[in-house]
Length: 98
Picture: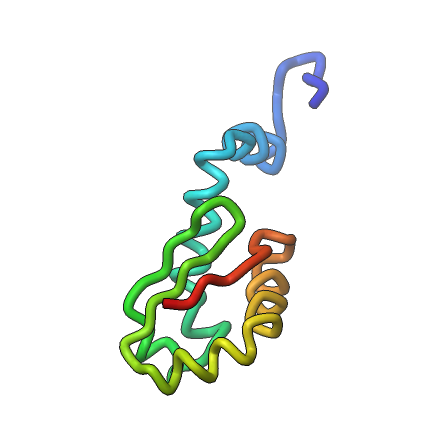
């Protein structure tokens, strides 16, 4: 990113500089997914979700209901697409359901 002559950055450029570190970007992605989980997947799935963890580009999802878990396994690709659409970029490549 080029510096402007007077070293002023726009807010967008400053945020991009701060989040360019992969550890910070991973943490931000994980927190956004956790916050938006109920909106993305719906109240029924969110109610039975006990944990969400991001490891690289894999999202680990833990359920307390075997029925919801089984249904979620069948719709894994759709869930990945919904999450990536909600985030606006390709953040999740695989879902691990437990």
